[in-house]
Image (cartoon, rainbow, N blue to C red):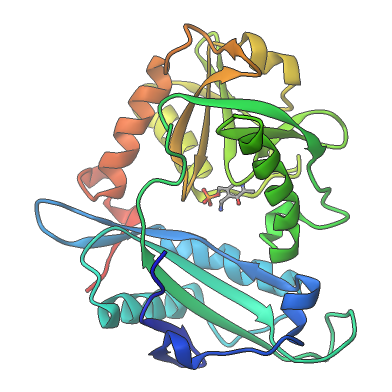
Length: 306
Ligand code: PMP
């Protein structure tokens, strides 16, 4: 990946190379950070760039920082403006992935969250697909368990917690799968390494509840609304058993990076017909229309970079 030229840090857009931290940086040693992931999409017709639901992303981001006892004098609106400033200064005209990161920046020894200095920065890079087989992903059920809310809260999008996601992803990829789904300690399906999970059984769309150690995904929330409003599909949040994934009609994952990724095989068993199902296919089409600013009805989710 090419490094970006600019970042937003300590109140202004600066050169990426001008922000440097030493080896004692707290977050580097102890995982005491929280991050976000936002996308900006280009509308090919108008050439405009639209951030997708940045206010919702930054609300979650600031809440994650709050869990880590960080207090920034920022709002979702001000964070969105910093993002716009960064993208404009960077001159990006294509699809972009934006990574806000809040972290304990003090260079000290000592595991704690209190009485330490924190900072946040924003980086933006041109970005395409995250899961290459996004219409036919083959997943496994990971042997790793999802972290519990009482150890490292999934809803916090805390940097240290992603060591668990990295175990999950690498074991899956090294075993020949595209991704893995993770069970909670109680043994229910929670989500993927960096995606929320949806399952279709008999035309009802199921997704695990936010109390089942998942990240409260913005894409998840968007897809639930669109499925109900546009497809008239009933959406139910409930616990999902592992073997339901083996017998369901459709399975797909959602996320800012993964967008809407259809799962067509789980642990070598075809999902439904073994090809992307009709609900996932329709939701993908709707989703891409919406994020690219082609659907007037959802224009309130698009924030123009201007
Ligand atoms: N779950 C996890 C663990 C994630 O890291 C992500 C990516 N942010 C998601 C779900 C999807 O969330 P969102 O749709 O807000 O990107």
